Image (cartoon, rainbow over all chains, first blue to last red; front, side, top):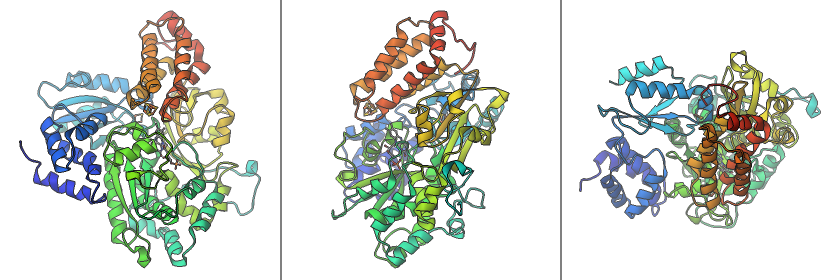
Length: 159
Length: 439
Ligand SMILES: Cc1cc2nc3c(=O)[nH]c(=O)nc-3n(C[C@H](O)[C@H](O)[C@H](O)COP(=O)(O)O)c2cc1C
Ligand code: SF4
Ligand code: FES
C-alpha cells in the first residue's frame, strides 16, 4: 500500500487543529477532499489511507465518501465539469447549455471523454443561482453566466 | 431609521444594506474596511462594559429578529435556551450551507462582509457562554470557504478570536469548515453530524442541540444572516431594528431573486416591502413577458400565482396571508411561458435525490412522486395520477424525522392546486400546454 503524500498529511494536520484533540474523525471530510484534489478521485486505497491516518474504521470513511455528492469514487478525467440543473438554472436555459456541452465534448452525464480529459456531472443547487447557467471545474473553480461561446473558449484554454 | 414612530402602513419600505453594508466599498471583505465602518465596536463595548448576557438577550428579543434560515424562530428566545450551568465546551455554529434552490444570500454576506458574521458570532458566544464555533459553508462555493477562512485568520491575528479576546477573560475560537454536496446538511442536526465527520443524517429530536449537539455538548445553530444582523442590533438598539420592519418581522431581509427577471441577484430591503416593488428592483420580468407565478421563499414554500403575490408584502404575515411563507427569502420568478409540469418534475427530482433515506415515507415517497411526474412528462400519465400525487405527498408530510419530508410535499400540492388544468392537459394530450420548451 502506498502512503498519503507529505503535503496531504500536512494539510490534514492543520485541519485537525480546528477540532478537540480526541475528535479526529471530524477531519475526515477535509481529508478526503485533499486526497481527491491531489489524485483526481478516491480509490479504495485512498479510503484506507485516510482511515489509517485518522484511526477510523474504513467503513466510517467509506460512508462519508459515498454520502456526499462531490466525492468521486471513480476516475473523472482530468477536468470534472459539474453543472447545476436545478430550478433557477433550468429557468435560465441550462438545458441548452447541457446539450451544447454534451455535443461539444461528445459525452453524456457521468461519462469520461475518450481522451480522458473531461467528465460531465449533474449537480443540485450550488447556491449561486443568479449566475446561471454555471459550472464548476474539479469542485473548486466556478464559471458563471455561460454561453456556448464562453464555454468553448474555456475548453480551449484548458487544453 | 425613522426619527419618529410611524404606523406600519406609513413607513415607506426601502433598500437597506445592513448585512451587505460593505458591498460597495473597496476591499469589502477586509478587516480594515469593516473597522472603518465601526466594525467590532459592539463586541468591544460589551467586553469593556461587561454588559450582562440577559440584557443583550432582551435587546435581541426587542429587535424582533427571527431566524433567517427558513423557520423564522425568534433568535433572542432561542439563545435563552442554551443551558447556563453546564461546564466544559459549548459550541455555536453558523449555518452557511445554503443549498435550497434559489438561495444565494449567505454567499454574498461571506463574500462581502465576513467580519460582521464573525462579530455576530462573538456576541452570540459571549451571550451563550460558547468557547468554540464553526461556520459550515456549502461545498460548491469553494472560493467563499477560502475567503472566510482568511477572514478568521485576520480576526485572530488582530485579537478578535482566540484566548483573552481584547484582553478580557472571554475565549472563543472560530473555524471555517465545509460541506461537500449534500443539501440535507443544512438541517441543523444533520449539520452537526457532518461536523462530527459522519453522514449528514438528521437526528431525532429531542434531545435538542441546545443540550446535546456537537460531540454531545450544548450547541446552538443559526443562519449566517441571523448572526450578521446581531452587531447592528447591539449598536443601534433592538427598537431601531424592529422599526425597520413591520409587525412580527423586525429588521431587514436579503431576498435572493432568481429565474425570469432582468436582474437576478440579492436585494436587502426592509421587511414589509410590497412584492411588486421588489420585482421592480430586480428589473421586472424578463423579455417583456407577464408574470405567471412565484415561489417566494425557496421550494419548501408554496408556489403562488401572479395575482396573489402582486398583492402581497414581503414579510412573514404578508406571505402567510396568501398561503405561502417567507422561508429563506428565495424568490423564484416564473414568466408566462413556464411549464408547471416540467418545473415540478425538476423540483421533485431534487427532493428525491437529496432525501437522506432514513425515514421510509420520505425515501419512498419522494421517489414515487418523482416517478409519477416523470411518467406524465414522458406522455404516460394516467387520469388518476393527480389524486395519487396528492395522496402520496400528504402521507409524507408530518411523518418524518426532519422537515425535508414536509418540504417535499409543498411544491407538489401547491403546483397542482394552482395549475391543475396544466397537469390535466399534459396527461390528456401527452404534451405541455405551454408548447415545446426546456424546463
Ligand atoms: C432540509 C433542510 C435544509 C435546511 N437548510 C438550511 C440552510 O441551508 N441554511 C440554514 O440556515 N438553515 C437551513 N435549515 C434550517 C436549519 O435546520 C435551522 O433551523 C437554522 O439553521 C436555524 O437558524 P436560524 O434560526 O437562524 O434560522 C434547513 C432545514 C431543513 C429541514
Ligand atoms: S425526512 Fe427525509 S431527509 Fe429528513 S431525516 Fe427523514 S429521510 Fe432524511
Ligand atoms: S438552482 Fe442552480 S445554482 Fe441554484
